[in-house]
Length: 333
Image (cartoon, rainbow, N blue to C red):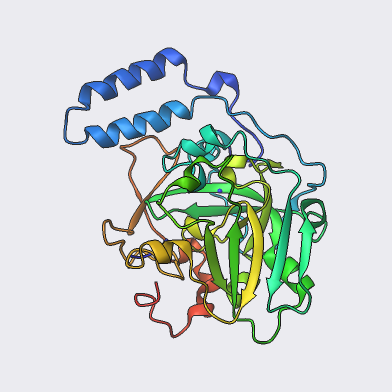
């Protein structure tokens, strides 16, 4: 293939703005009526997502150490309409909890995010292990409004909270031989029901080139919408790499390892024809089974809304394209 975050950012729908139960039940009845048609399966899937979005999702609450300020990093803010918290926290990819978009919310309730630590090792001057409380103090927390584009053709705009990953990596002093950064996520068969499946090799492993990891747009995130990260969104600490497809933004991180060799990532191992290492958003390189030229923004008027054109590097071309100068982005997808 190819590979592949309310206007203010802090305001959320009041109860009066939520679709009344009778209305969405009528809508679902209409969906069922057309389900026998050619588009029935897609309509039914969208109806399920639309109905889930009407539920009030419990929020994990404020994080005391989270004192977010607007980011000064170029490209880290946008005037685009934000995805609602409700949509962003109920429509997720997190395969450790299941492959359906509603599974992470449904099955992550028992997942334990405290205590938590993140180790940084490999080609560094000093291997270190950081408790989550220490991680929060390493950099100034910023609000960054990033697009998140997924390989399945959908996107969101989310106000993430965190700081550049480079703040952490500089503390461990990468050696000159370090060229890549590997990210390893939590795996717990007792609280993550899908890690007993064979859909992927566990734990989930992703990677970046060192210059990508050190780029100021690459975010180590602890929250979104002014709140602690919900479990289904990657609590307590995750990566956000906005110019790449969403699966590159590893969730619930437990280990970061600097290496000389390119990491063998989970999706590359599982389906190398479909998921390359770089995974830069590229409308000109299709997934073998579908086009990547357009996308659907979650929350924009339902299944029949006009799709958007996919932007090169997800709209961050002016900030990141220089890292790939001279590369064949069809070959190195």
